[in-house]
Image 1 (spheres, rainbow, N blue to C red):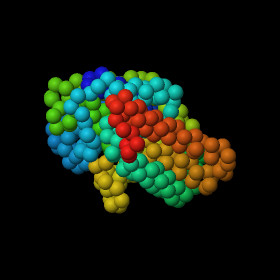
Image 2 (cartoon, one colour; image 1 turned 45 degrees about the vertical axis):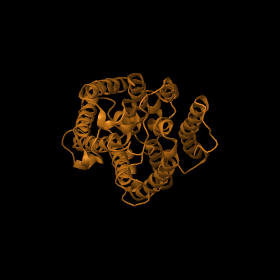
Image 3 (spheres, helix red, strand yellow; image 1 turned 90 degrees about the horizontal axis):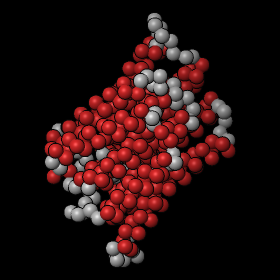
Image 4 (spheres, helix red, strand yellow; image 1 turned 120 degrees about the horizontal axis):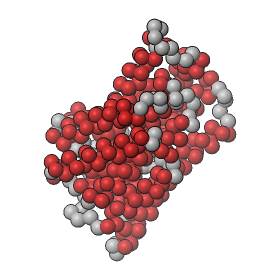
Length: 336
């Protein structure tokens, strides 16, 4: 259990956290890593404590996983096969491939939940893609173009050009997004420690120390290979652009967590990776349409490359599930 948790924590933090904090790292690259870690780690600690003590209802649940494991069958005893998903994820992350940890880890525990998670994640990609296109078609000329033409000013300046104002706005939007992401994806880590309601205070404390330590390492290395997904997109190093990316991403996650549209099951886990990639793809397409350079084969290749990398996680997930069932002597013909 502890080995699986440690591997899952490192893999999830190394792969998924960049979706949430990638723009935060890119746009604050001149600041010491430990300052950024203190901010993100402080929010993480508060969210974990709220979940563990049962006061996280406003975030979507009353346990440390915020009810995201209610539909997942967690075995009483974990065989060594269960460390395969985070172990494989660890190697994939080193290659800079943003796979879905939700598919790779949670589907290994509960195959019956996979169709629902897949539907919700595909819907998440489509909604984030469409939402980003609409928003950025409206604001690209008014904002993104000005962001590229007019750098931020220090000292006395109008608030829309003030570095101090946009730094505060970006940190607030990052905090909002970070809490939304944590309440979605902590389940991918804590599933290795059994049912959330049975988690002891001692094990919870150890888990928090491990996650905070791994988060510090990710900040120290400035995101690692996955950070290239964020850095390759238009103007993501500008703290003003990063503010809007984080805010829109957080709103989309909130919509899916609260089941505002009534099209999915609110407590069913989903791939935040696919939502993130949909958001970046829609944003990039809209910016190219409005302010150039015009969409071309290079943009198409970038979008499909990101989708292909995310699909790797799904293929590996299904392959691992089939492998587990075969090894355990179970019939896989009616698996899904």
